Amino acid sequence: MKEYFFIGSYIDDKSPDDRQGIGYWSVDSSTGGLAQENKTIAIKENTHFSFNRDYFYSANDIFNYQGENNGCLSVFKRNKNDQLERIQQVSSFGTGTVYTRLIANNKFLLTANYIAGNVLVYPIDSGGMLGQPVENIQHIGHSVNIERQESAHPHAIELSHDERYVYVADLGLDILKVYQFNHESGDLTARNDLDMPVELGSGPRHIRFHFNGKFAYVIHEMSNQLSAFRYDNGKLSLLKYYNLSNGDNESSTGAELHIHPNGQYIYATSRGTDCICVFSIDLDSGLLTLTQSISTAGSTPTSFAIAPNGQCLVVGNQLSNAMTSFIINKDDGLLTYTNQIADIEQPIMISFNANS
Image (cartoon, rainbow, N blue to C red; front, side, top):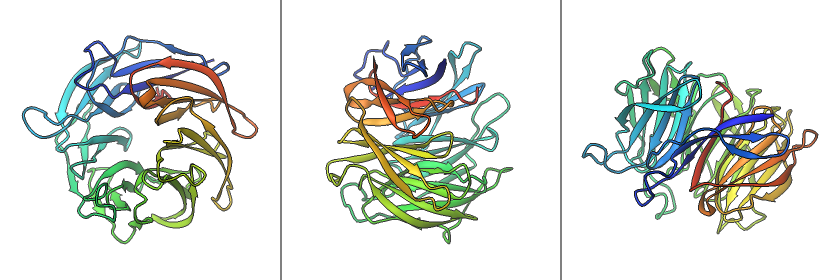
């Protein structure tokens, strides 16, 4: 059975114009076989994307949009064959545009500018087009690492399972910033009382909420760790930190995490050691147990995704220009490398077509 996914490549100005920026692929969930399904879209500096059945939104980490020191967001319309036609491009009002998140039944798009340090909310009209931001919130401050945390660096944005709060993992501040979200206006109200500081120098990168609404998990780029939290009415309470590379945290960085569709396992990638760690989840306590650490068969696994049927996983090894697949054991969540490899330039973002 084939499962379909979009993949984004970080194509810079030195890359030929015909190299892909966004592609549409499939994986055979029984064999791990990878296949390109559509002609790719050439787009520069594609760092992250979000999509629904009809539209596709891409963050472009450029530094000069229409003569201003800003990145941009590109909007594409999806046709019935899952090909993309660009219909709009707008300023991201900051540099280092690294994350997008569709929320409120696709009424709003949130984005984060890692370098500029701001978070924005764009309204979306009935034709999928982005309006002027209704929010542009600047994060202020720094943390202990003067090279990496000299200022705010918001990275991932996530909505709590109850959809009441927006959480921003700010690597530069070592804080999970919390905002109350208005589903009608798109307004974000700062909830400083709910902000969750993390270990200094850890650099929170991505956050995921468990489907049961009771737990949240954060991957820390700089300390190469995963942390577990209990969630209750907007408040996070720390449970425990877990290393991702058997103590070799200095030379490795945490990248991405995802929870298996059955809610029993969590997967996290570590760059440097270039592995995927598999943890089982205690559904009563939220605590984790490391059950496997397996090579990604490449260098710098920046992004990966789990097929909606839970049977396989695809990882992008950014600096070895390769995508690999794994079969997931249905009984224990462990991974088996399939030896299926596809050449693709700097894969940086993978997302399955679960909501099409």
